[in-house]
Each structure stands twice: as C-alpha cells, then as structure tokens.
Image (cartoon, rainbow, N blue to C red; front, side):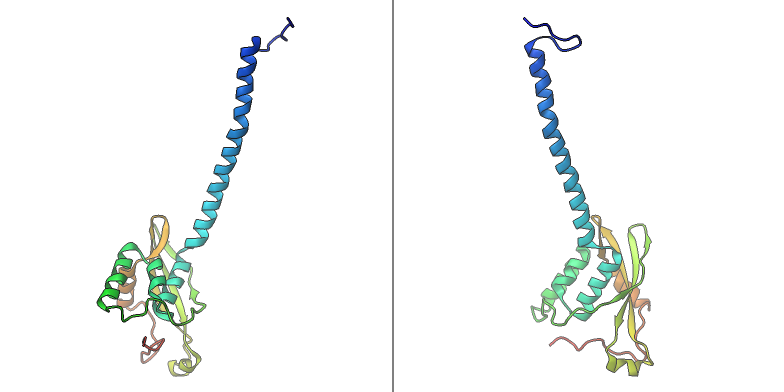
Length: 184
C-alpha cells in the first residue's frame, strides 16, 4: 500500500470528505454571485422605477392637472390617496375618463426639501403661450407637492398636497385662470 504524504488525511474516507468539501465550494460561489446580482438588479430597478420625490411630484402634476389620467394618478399617490381617487371615481359614476386625453408636459421641479420621510417639491407647470400675455409675463404656475415615503417608495400625500394649495403655496396667474379646458 502506498504511503500517504505527511500532513495529508489518512485513508480513502478522508479523501472523499475532502472532495465533497471541494464540490460544495463551486455551487456556493455560484449562489453567492446570483444573490449579489439579484440585489444589484433590484436596487437598480426599484430606484429607477420609483424615482425620487421630484420625479413622483412631476408625475403627479402631469396625471392630476395636465393629462387628467386617473390611472396614472393612482400610481403616484399613497394608499389613502388612491382610496380618495377611487371614491371620487365612484361618485362620478364613471363619467370621468380614467385614461388621460392630453399629452404630458416637461415640468420643472425644484430640488426636494426632505425632512425625514416627507419631502416638499415645487413643480412649475408651463402656461400656454396664449395665456402668457394675459398673466403679466408669468410663464408658469407653481404648485407645491408633498411626498412621503410609503414602503420605501416616494408617493404623493394627497391630503397634505391639497392642504398646501389651500394655504396659498401655489402661485396662480394674476386674475386666476385655468390650465386646461374641463374634461368633456
């Protein structure tokens, strides 16, 4: 029988244990790589999908004011806001279109002021050229949007945003005015 080198495990059983340990290393490395890639992909897609408070504020204003797209609006708001939108839809008896009819606008948003899980963003809604002459040269209407973190994603708090508008944090054109014609 051949002599085992010094320091090597003795006998065929020890060699099998050593081979089993070696055969476990490759699958563990593969599993580790898959987990790391999964975490990186999830982080990338979740960050891009939800966006920050500035993006959700712009999406909200486009859905609520510009396109009047109630389905897109539901995506932008908190669970409580979604319930309010759905309640309003039921009260209108289906007379309001659920999909917007207009085109979204490129909106300007200020850098969010974040305090904990709440952010305040001012969104500028461009006025049509025919209105600019009647507004003393004002080219946009500012709207304050309040976003909160809901399950790690920024969503618009509909009640707080409405309250911000009532407190006069929105600049309307001189003499008032509407942004878009009422839905038909």
